[in-house]
Image (cartoon, rainbow, N blue to C red):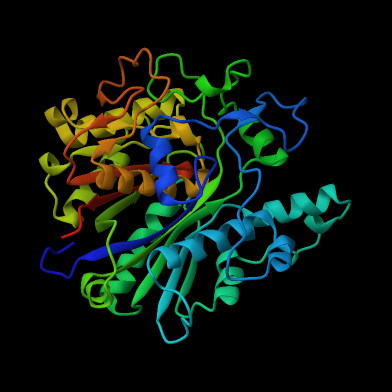
Length: 407
C-alpha cells in the first residue's frame, strides 16, 4: 500500500467459534491458551480414523430476523448471518443500511457439498441432479440484512479469508464501496469432510488425547485437527470512520499472494512461492521486515507443511527469523479450512489490541527443521505495532496480510 494513500481501518468484528461468540471472548481464549478440541458428538465416528475436532454445537440467533426463521436456516447460513450481523453491529452500522454502499467479499469452501450431504442422509438423490446446490451464504445473509453493494464469493482454500481482505481494501481504494464486509465462514465437521481428510491421512489420530493433537512445529505432530467457525470484518477508510465516530480495531496495511500449483494437497517443499507471498505482502504494505513484531503462522501441524512454512519465514526474514515471535493459533482453534485465515485475522487483532501474542499449544519439542522464535504454550506480553499473517492453501494458494495499530 502507498503510505500516502488513505489508511484502511478495521472497525467491526463478527466472530463465532467454539472459543467464543464475540471479539473479547475469542481474544481472551486465545491469549489464555484455551482449546475446545474434543470428541465429536454430532454424528457417529466409529468408522472414522479420527474421532475429534473443534466444532460448534449451536450458533446464537441473529437479532436481524425472527428466531423461527433463523431456525429454518442451515448451520452454514446461520453462521454467515450471525457473523455479518455482529460485524455490522460492532462497527456501529445498524438500522436502515439501504443508503450506505456496503460490499460483501466472502471466502467459502465447498458449501454445495454440504447441501448434497444433508440431502443424502435425508434419503434424497440431489447429488445426481445438477442444479440443487446450496444458495450462497453471502446472498442469503445480504437479502435478510438488506446490505447493498457489490458481492463476491471467493474460494482459495485456506487462503480465502486473506484474499477477501485484499479485495475489500481494493474496492475501498477504488471508491466502489464506502464499507466492506470481508472474511469467511465454514462448517467443516461433517461425516464427509472428516472422512475425506482422514483418508488423506492429513488429520491427527491422537484419539486418546484430542486436546494435545494439534501441535504445530512440534517434532511429534501427526496431522491437523478439523475446526469450524467464522469471522467477518468491516473495513472502511479512515476519514469515513472518523466522521462517524467509529473506533478502529486495527489498520489493514496490505497483502500479497502467489500460486505455485505444485500439487493438489502437498505443499511445495521448496517454499519459494510461500516466501514470495510474504515478500509481496511486506512490499505492498510498505513495511520493512524489521518492523514486524509478530507472525501468525499458517502452522497446520502437518509434517510437510510446517517445515515448508518455517523455510519460507527463514528465507523471507533472514536473521530476523530468529527474533520475531511466531505462533500458530490452529493449536487452539483447529484448522478451519476456508475460514482459517479469517479467524487468524481476529487473532492478529487480539495481539494488537491486547499487546500480547497468543501461544502455540502442545509445542513441547520443536522440530529442528522448524527453527523459529516460537511462543510456546503461554502468551507473551510484547509491544506490538505490526503483525503478519500467513495462509497457504491446498493447490498452492498462498496469501499473506499485514495489520498495524490504527493511526
